[in-house]
Image (tube, rainbow, N blue to C red; front, side, top):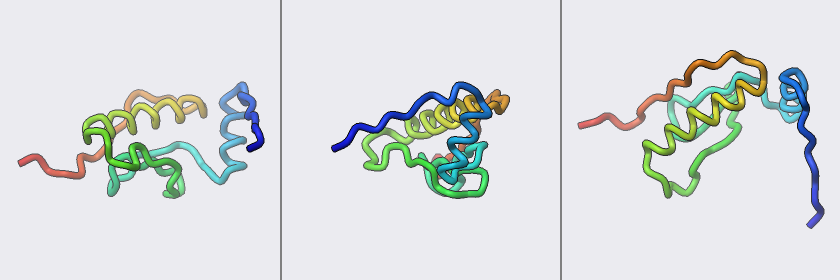
Length: 91
């Protein structure tokens, strides 16, 4: 297997450009329908967190929010919080 190196784009504009080259448009947002899924600004799936369902839902929701904030911040978006929908109502 060949080793591939990806360089840090070094700026928010550079980060936006490399993601756009991969058909990912920021800002990311958590899916309202699937826990742990991050969507791009066009509603396309970008990443699924805990695809095997090994983590508790609370961890998945928290990881989704923090990863969403980190990626958006790297792209130059001012990020104060991320909101995720609790997909399973509490009894």
